[in-house]
Length: 488
Image 1: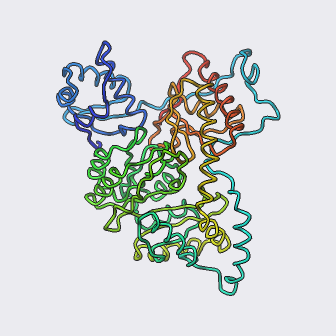
Image 2 (image 1 turned 180 degrees about the vertical axis):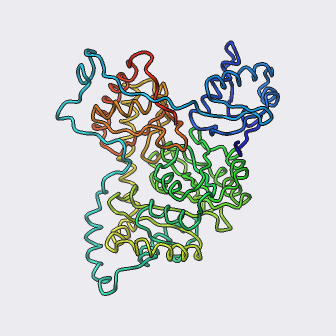
């Protein structure tokens, strides 16, 4: 049975204004089903009693009973006498692709095959090329390198000169930080894996967003953590988040408050304060992924304070990375923590990789010393590519829904049907790699979403959307009765 519970007023708030077309129970069932499919109601969440939800919504108990009955028939609710009702997912429905019948005009001809010279477009990777000043930074780092060649080259905590620069950047953002609070890692993924190995034991409950960064889910699963997901498709609901933290007694929460990957949401200062307070009450750590924090590209985007600025008890641990702002080929990341935890992490990483590459650290230092130039370049190119992508989507796929983000590198697009996995397969045949929504979730929901990074040039993104439109037509015109992809 579930350890999570949503009350009548909470569920009513999530449902919002339920359409009142007749029959009302069917409208209510559709609204609850949508909450399950887009991840805002996790599977195995206990639902409020029929009387409580009816009172919160201002409808009759008979209406709620009929809605629950409909959801049970569809497989989205399970019940047991004496235990109540809880959310569920329908049984897995497997399918095999069927060949398309011949004929049917399209952007790429009758079989929708891309032209031979079109090239493969990878929308699965959200990482840009190196910035314009990269060559100068490399030259300066190479010139500096001989100073470090007389020693062994192993600095488990990272080069002192880089840790000092990273600490100064935190201080400039309003979070006083010393160099001994910084551990340099071999990328953000290494940083997160190191934290899970240090702070999480098998069976520990760990809160994650739904959707979230897939490789973080992989690290937690390998550690044997029990994942507790909270939906963020429509932004963060701190009341529900705090309730889930408390009910599941989470050990750690992994959050991406700055241009969240993949939704692009930016957490408000008030929600950041509430999240830290909820962690304090639940006696949990909050691991904050700031990989996208420096990538605001909309001039109107608010500048929210770092989550760590609300922390007074050492509960907030921050991960940073060179991969998105600077270049993915620089496998350098960092952790900001208390000095005692930083020492523990340094000792824990030595049996794994000893230390991060010296030359890469020196290049990152040079780039961070000129970070304002890099930010400006990224803002200009990302804004241009974002606008090209959104414009092409509105023209070629007007039924898709999305909110252009004010920062980050990804667009989270909602399709007109739960066919993201089918779409990804069809797009791959047309020379476009795209990541379907379930990749970013814990339990197979989000089948009506795809992530679309906009790190490629505008002309390439427009071509990619042309191919996606052709792939979507293929999916829409699949034979009637062909099963949808599995939800789990």
